[in-house]
Image (cartoon, rainbow, N blue to C red; front, top):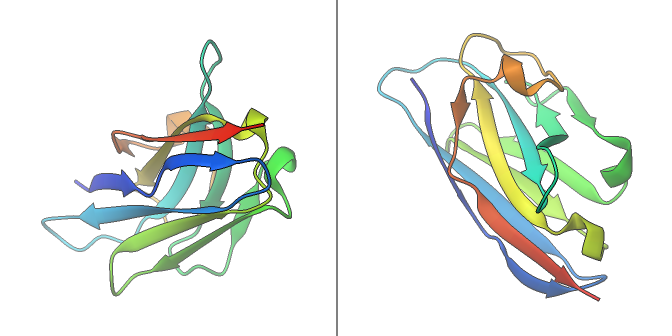
Length: 125
């Protein structure tokens, strides 16, 4: 099973940028898709972006399109989420998640079976 560790969160002013990383460690090599989700205080966890195993397919929720970019480096077992033009409403804990049984993307949290511990992103106005 894949184990995931997020990093790169922090406090940034509106309009600023951050790059989140999701590093994977696994006992056996298994192709998997990865998604980023976020949860703001008092709100449900929501989908942000996902990338297929090959990296050829990426999907985003409408509110982050054009501002966030997901990418991956399989040699480093790391998936990135570049956040730009950040807004206060982007404030949330960001989680990465892996679909250990599938290589293609999904927007549904229930399709992901391995989750990281989360990294806090705070955007001040």
